[in-house]
Image (cartoon, rainbow, N blue to C red; front, side, top):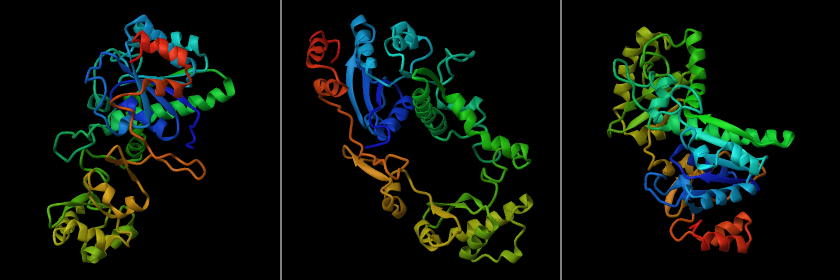
Amino acid sequence: MGPLTGVKVVEIASLAPAPFGCMILADLGAEVLRVDRASGSAAVTPPAGPLDRGRRSVAVDLKSPEGVAAVKRFVRDADVFIEGFRPGVAERLGIGPDELLAVNPRLIYGRMTGWGQEGPLAPRAGHDINYIAIAGALEPIGRAGERPHAPLNLLGDFAGGGSFLALGVLAALYERERSGKGQVIDAAMVDGANILMSFLHGMRAGGMWPNPRGENMLDGAAPFYDTYETADGKYVAVGCVEPQFYAQLLDKLGIDAAGLPFQMDPAGFEETKKLVGEAFRTKNRDEWASLCADSDACVSPVLSPWEAHEHPHNQARKAFVEVGGMIQPAPAPRFSRSQLDEPVAMDTGGRDIAAALTAWGLPESEIADLTRACTVR
């Protein structure tokens, strides 16, 4: 029984950010009904996998009056509605905030976009890399003298997008307990990426981020905060910022600290990094991980996503689960009283419409009418 048990969410199928936010809500116990488009374009939803888990689903023709009426019927009993259309599309379909809040004044209406609902770029297309570019989150990532490097689509789609959408939903649900009223959430990936850069703005203002990309303490310039190749061609990550941890790293590497430049002196970074790199190339990745495991040297093996579930720490915390034959990250965070259920795969394939709508609370007569008219399929 997760902490969101009893919360009902209608999700209009879309690409990665909104499904990720709805996955978080489902993982925390919310009941999520995903509305797919009856036309069934492969570009509408991502491949089946973790982002789909915990849902029931039905397909609806959103361009028909009957389909719009069906969505409004689902919303009548919902707490949350999530859509990921470009601004204005939901209104044109007849499922915009005004229409749905008229049906259910307590509804939390979540809107997930890249650029937000207003501003000169609001009607334009874009993807993660575009949003983080104007947020200043892309420019600092990369090696000195090289071009910026996209950090997958983690910062815009998932950290700045879906995570902040879920946070907005939780905040609005909490506020509704006092006001009794629903409201609209404008969750923009560019806004989320902006706020993720808060720490770096503080570093810059404090004189601790003075240099171009790849020449600062946390972007790969410092020998105590970087990755190093090991004897087997794999890598370890080093993050010993504090002097006492740095001392333990040097001890594990067999490097005499007395002959090195001061840890925080940028003029000595290159010299120290060369020595550290040479030392790491004397053993394999997993040998270093084992050697440093019981220390505070802050050395970790750089694992692929497909290796992560095998790490002893992840295994001890049961950080991965198998859902529908696929190993994937387990729900997070954890709670002292609220027990999160094991995730289940979405009802892909045959899609039991009767089961989905019965669970949503519709009576058999309404379900029969919807399926008979092929409004829901």
